[in-house]
Length: 143
Image (cartoon, rainbow, N blue to C red; front, side, top):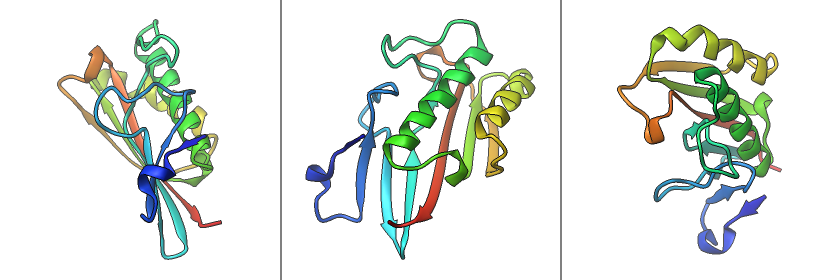
């Protein structure tokens, strides 16, 4: 876990990052951990199906990208001390709604029975030519 507390010292939120997920491709954090009211929240940035080592999209189309995006999210969650059972909300962006069922199956498998609230929307385009991007919000009691 890389927790940039020095830059965020004195704040109720801190950036969370891990080399096990792709580095941000813009001026944003992989995730922000927020403490409020005895709870700890994790807000992730959207994850594409990028390989963390190469920075390239996972080969094999939408299904492969969705698997990689979920693996990236698992790594970001773990870096913040969370897991998929803590997820309360997800948003999935697809460039083609015809991919909904394939992505849905991969998403359900990765969440292992967790049933967060979710929205799925079609986007005209995603960064780096991706076909799927997923973001999430997780919450747990503050340690």
